[in-house]
Amino acid sequence: MLLQQLIESDNLKEKILETLSKNGLDSPCYAKILDYTISSFDEAGRGKDYYGYHNIIHELEVTYVTLIAAQWESLQNYITLEDMKYLYFAALFHDYDPQKMKEKPHEEVAVNFVKTDETILGFLKDANLDVNIIAALILRTTYPWSGELKEKAEKNIEKYLSLSDLTKNDSNLKEHYKKLGWFLSVVDRISGYSLGNFNHALELANKNAYALGWHPSVLAKRSIVYFEDLLSNETEMCDHVLHALPKPMRKLFMDNVLAFLKLREEELMIQSSLVYENVKIFPVIETTKTRQNEEFIQTLRTIYDELPSPHQFKKENFADSIRDPNTILNTLRLGNEKGPIVGFAKGGPLEDYKHRAQNFDKNYGMFNTVFLEPIALKTGYYGQGGGHEIRVLFAIQADAKGYKFLTSFAPRERIQKRIERQEGIESVKEFSPDRWDYYRITLNTNNSR
Image 1 (cartoon, helix red, strand yellow):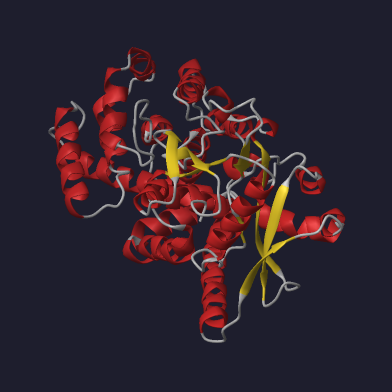
Image 2 (cartoon, rainbow, N blue to C red):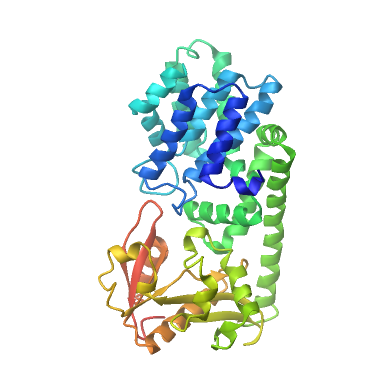
């Protein structure tokens, strides 16, 4: 199976079970805990369709890569079969927080769940594993591992290792499990970037950026810092993990790191051309004839594909939506009105979209509301003002077509800032923990800007 094909929960589940069996971990409790994990994430709204970074796909990616790396390390006598069992259980639930109000995981909540959930405790008993060691491993995945977060996690790790009959009187074994937790923490940050191409890496970075509150304009820069911290400040364990991975996975990870460096270089060149060379960007209302052109549609599709998948509305019939006369569309072009396309704004009647708004928007079914899909910009053009310009132009187009309201989704913080600027925007429905909320604007050209 190609690595890129792994990035689906069913495929990951299959490969995890295969790896467990290969290493002699074929007791029914290992398959049952895997099924229980998947169902728990689904029931908590953290399945594969959840926007945030810490969904079931991430959890399964970390589990799979942990097992792959651990089995190699077991050949080097660094990790035992017993260690692999502990790593497996800890990886499965290291981010689980069924009631969390923020996307960023709260490891203490995950620990509390593991320590109190009767089903999990039953599986641990079947596998003859100590829940206190699982707790210590999960706590070591705290990120960033610095300051007060680190100090608090270290105290709790020491507490749980002192509660375990296995480690409370064995300082060497305590240190071993602390190092095993470090191993899991590095795998946690490497795993997704070692399983997919740069499109997958970009989506992970976008989701991680959202979880950490980064603006898209700093995604490449912050991602480089993220990898630099991993490769430079945790060199010992990072080298351990990378050398434990198969060559194709190791290559994918390093290729993705280099791709972010290249992306940052491209961003700086874009900023230079816009600021120092005074290159202009132009919002353009495209003609009906242009919207039928296959090359034009493909150009938009390429930019659209850079959006995180939960932001890709009308994915299956993207080309038809561009051609549809009911679709409002404008583009952002570079240099002049005929220049290269670097972004676009697209949307249409709210009733044409089958998403969660239909359950609570009072105007759904009244055909007086236009839905604006997430703005799509070519990577490198975020933060340059173009997104604002095409969003304003879209609102003007919608107003001209007789719509009374414009709705869309946006990060809660950005909606709040626009409210504070008195832009005539209201928050209609909040969604947690992703904080990707639904807003409404009453249209006229004075307050849609």
